[in-house]
Image (cartoon, rainbow, N blue to C red; front, top):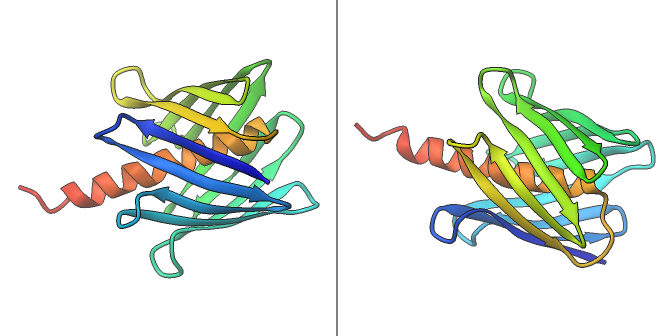
Length: 164
């Protein structure tokens, strides 16, 4: 069993990831006890990752396909969702979450069980610091970092939408 832990953003403004990889399942929590989302993903023999982040009503479906050096898929539904494209180039992990206008870039590196880098841009974005206890695919680890940032951005968008 592998443990994936980490943070997107800082100590005050950020979101945590605390998940376990056991066999072909990834389970755990993004965010905190009260504000966040549960994770339940299954890694299938056909190289796909399917599951859910969040509850049955307010959660998002996760449907991704993994090849040798890339992960592509969709988080959420056909209309209220985002496309995910992640690729590994040597020790660099790069990609895009969402569309060309609304979305964020992934610029990460994995070394000695530590995933570090940036999600979003150099100005409007957050740093990433994740750790993994055992060997986990860099693509799966990057997906978990992206899901953490995605849920963080979703929480902040909802919490600020009523202010005026």
